[in-house]
Length: 392
Image 1 (spheres, helix red, strand yellow):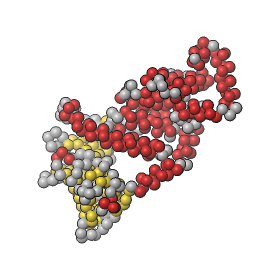
Image 2: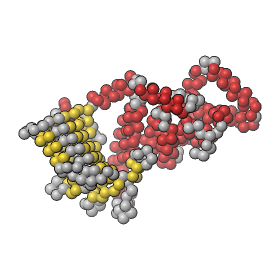
Image 3: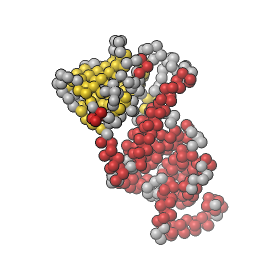
Image 4: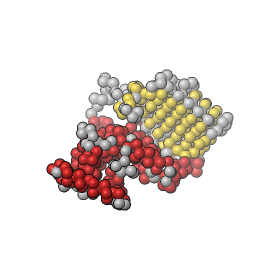
């Protein structure tokens, strides 16, 4: 009705707009709050984008109690271990490392053992030299990171899906797996000393001396395929750019299904971690988790929608628009993807383009009361400030 009045009688619309302005000046804070919540923006749609971003950064910098608790919980789940010149192997106990991210930092001339009774969150090997690690336990995130280390060996009894290795330029860094099926994927940068092996076989050098980050995965014939990591405008890995003659591409989907399901499950774990960070108002950390989810499973539309909301909360409307568009491409029947798109366009003051996106959200979720409120606000702002760029 509001849109129809505005289109058929401009003078009548101007009177209504003026009346709305007067209402807003008379302490109508509750109505303003509803509109702000409908758009998911702290400062509402009326303020300039820069003011929104400033207020949102202030909110984040304030460290709400929830965010403090979240950060404290994360720190409590991490432990740093340093040992040097030990003749006997160091056994990490369940009390020390269970359900924690463990950082082996500055370890030299020592062997460290993780027994099968543990379950780690992640394992980091940082600035270590002449270190041997026996990883007999599961890693919940299936993630191993090694950086600035030399003459190191990590023997993985359980599968590790993703290994990241950076700046290992000197003595060899060997990652050894028990079975060929356990060998995961590797992201590495400037690691000419990186080698991979299956127990009982000679290590294979996969690392290269390069400032580019590259991606290596097992090939179908027992070899290793390496390619540059392709990044999008936000500097996140987007595609792997597989070579055209890669035989893995021509394999039927049924052959790749199990790995896809495994990746989706791991991505959902990351998305759940992002949700917890978001609830604690730690939007930047939440965005990191959602990014990891999209890297593991690029077609997980929920992670794209969630990260779009993080970008809106941190005043990055352009990035929010990119993520919401990606979400609608992956899941055109998901209402929140269109709602996020509408919010992003509204935040960019592209009101005319925001209205059809929000309208699509309303079609898909007609019972959501926030959506018509957002549409009304976009219509009002389009009349008051102009439509902005009308193209989505």
